[in-house]
Length: 145
Image 1: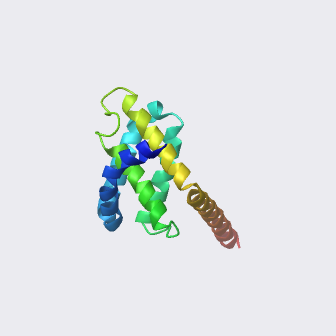
Image 2 (image 1 turned 135 degrees about the vertical axis):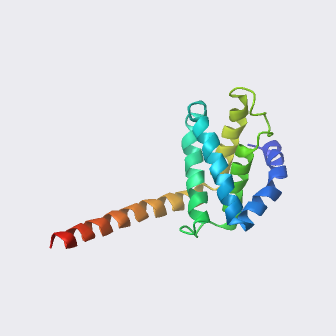
Image 3 (image 1 turned 120 degrees about the horizontal axis):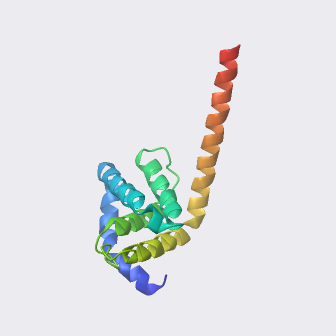
C-alpha cells in the first residue's frame, strides 16, 4: 500500500478512535466483522485467516486479557476492521468479489504495519495455551492422586 491507500483509510480514523474509547461499541463492531468474514469466508481465501488474527487481538483487548498491544497498533487494527465492515469503501461490497479485494489489501497493509506486535501477540497466545495445557495436566494429575 502506498500514500493513496493511507489516504483511503483516513476517513475511518475518527471512527476507529471512537471504538477504542467504548468497549461495548467495539464488541458490536467485532460481531459485525465476524459475521461478514464468516459469510464471505470462501471469497476471502487466505485473507480470512489474516482477519481472524486481527479479530483475535481485538477480542482479547476488548475483554481485557491482552493489554500489551500499543495504542498505535491497536488503532491500525481497529481501522482495518472498520474499513472491512463498511459497505462503502474503496470498492463497494455489493460488487461480487470486487468489494473484498480492497478489504484484503487493507488487511495486508494493517498486518504489515503491526507485524512485530502481532508476532508478540501470537507468542502470548501460544504461551497462554501452553500454560493452560500445563494447568490442565496438573489438575488431572491431582485428581488422579
